[in-house]
Length: 157
Image (cartoon, rainbow, N blue to C red; front, side):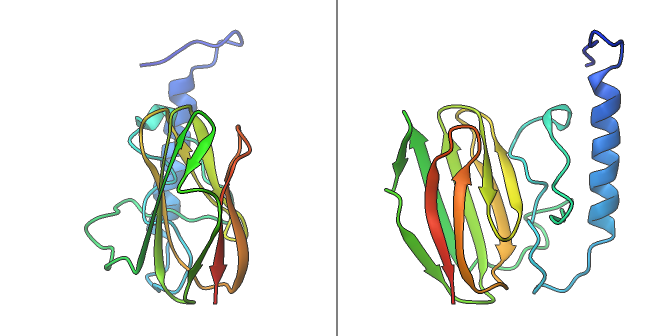
C-alpha cells in the first residue's frame, strides 16, 4: 500500500528504505549479549510501513523469540486515561540482567528508555516492547514522548 504525499513521494518507498536500513543494522550486530540492544525492532505489531527508523545509538535484531535467552526481569505497564499502572515508582535491576519492558497504552504514543536511547512505538491498544541488557549503572527514566508520562525510574546497580 502506498500513500501519495503532496510532494508526490510515496510513503511505501520511504518505508522500504527504513526497513532495509533496519535489516542491515540487524545483520551487523555483534553477538555479544552484554551489548544493550533491543531484541526486536523498536516497534510492536504495527505493519512495516508504520515503523520508524531506530535512533542512531539503538541497534535492532530481526528476530526476538528464537535467539533470545531467558529474560531476567519482565516489567509490564498499562496506561489508561493518562493513568500509569502500576503507579510511577522505582524499579531496581542488577547490572547485566536482561530486561524486557512491555507497555500498552490506550492512545498511540512512543516509549523511550533514557540513557539507553531505546524506544518502541505504542499503537493504541497494542503492546510495545523494548528488551535490552542492563549494562549501564545509574538511574534512568522510562517515559512516553507524546503524553510525557514518566512510567517509572529504572535503577541499575
